[in-house]
Image (cartoon, rainbow, N blue to C red; front, top):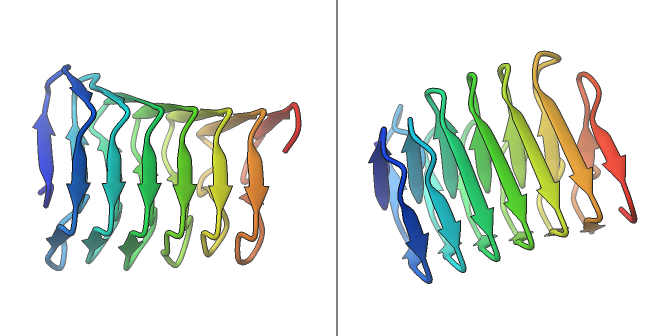
Length: 171
């Protein structure tokens, strides 16, 4: 688990870091950062160039976690299943603010993928050049809120909504 960083039920602040060029094997998850329980906060981090042979090329959030990403760059990742940039699953949630999510690839949710009963709030964030949609809500049980974000050149479109994604401001 966690090719770069594995956070198991911890709540810490991670500031001004670079997590780059990590990978996970078949069945592994979260090549860059694997958040498995807890409520970590990431400030000014660059997570780039990671590759997962399952879900979450960049950041994976699972096991009732709540992750916060502020002023981060999540770019250049690939995942063979879902969530090229960020994958939030189960009953987990994430808040993404003032970030850049760019150039990520996955069969579902190149930028951000949500499945399960949790939620994702994305605010003042740039989502560009992600494939299989920049934001992909994979189940009707979860919810995505998008507020004042910029979307550009995302292959297959910007959103896939299974339920009730909320969009406000310029998108």
